[in-house]
Length: 280
Length: 239
Image (cartoon, rainbow over all chains, first blue to last red; front, side):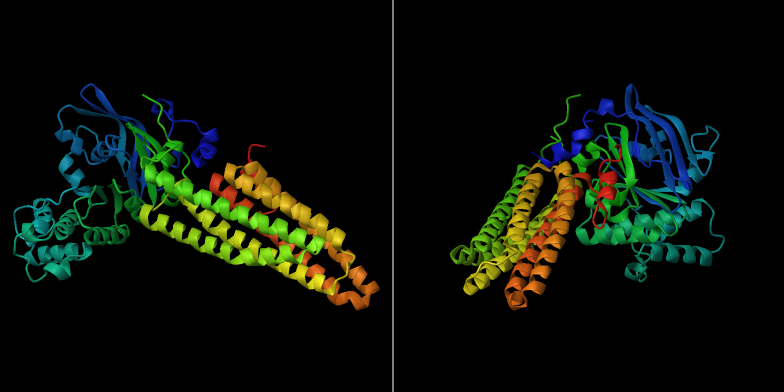
């Protein structure tokens, strides 16, 4: 007998249509962000089905799942990045500290300062390192004097673990940095506007293992001050950096549990099958 | 949507290497089981030739243990197993150690067989040795079968049986102590039998350890240092 057969004996849900409710602990007490009954449509096609999830204060939550499972779509709902896609429609309640982020009267610019985002490919502006970090604080009017701005830039670069590497060349172009440095520059740019939540969409998929390790180390440090939601294709990365792991499958949130539990003894057979590499 | 096939890894090689791991573990189990059977037979029939055979197999068991350890390390390094795969590798890694210790205990029994037969005299206490030997052989056989089938119910029964073995060991020890008090001149020979009894009792303990690894493997529950009823409650909460 195969060990899988022994284990899934009493948990024979292997069809996505059988997934009614998320197993594990999708909701927490000290939620920074609360999402309820979230459906997302691209035109006629439904991409997300009734997701309920809380993200706790200073929590690192990893979202994993096969390609097309909706994890990035869901992440992009959290700061209304999906607004840029015309056919995309989001239903349900999405709250940031009790505030409805899909309130039509809400200005998305300050929302995106509170909920920042780091993308898959490092995308520094074609400006100097200094200006990349200063850009956000400048448009949000966060620094009155030059000295204040210098301080924000230095603090942000320090928090992003990049200061020592760039302090002597702040006025050189950000695009001249290595891939890993560029990604940390983007993280510095994101934290320069003092966000509360940082969304990361596969932030290490274009980086080598050393640069990846640095970003992961950074995620751990940043979680002291920020709430972080990270989408990753690397299950080892999810295992290394996150407190809770959410498993998405064909637009449904199958399981959310403590990361330690997900990777040693997941509750759902689909999660088990995915993380052990058993999809066929 | 089609039913997903979640019994097999996408990587056939990964399936093959995990199958190999299990097969090699069970093969090692087979060797140790035979060692135990032979050692009990050697001591109850005072067959020194058979006892020597048990001793000679020791290095083979050690080699198997090292090969299995190496395979576990390879799988962890190359595959980063998770969930049930991780539990399989961890369980086998630990259970291998228990098998090796069982082999060591069988060796002790064989050594006692040689010592006792050198003295050339049958003693009281052989009945106890035979009975305990029979029970221990059975529990080892059941343990390997339960591992092969990932059978949690049998694993629970093994844990219970180990308690019964412990009790039988206590009774046998009392019989031998009485015998030693009545025949002080035979104390050294009787001591050899108590060592063999002790070795059998230890083999039962290792079988119980392996049963606990089976429960961890299948259910993801750590039931070490728990009473039988606590184990049952955790494994079968609905009952």
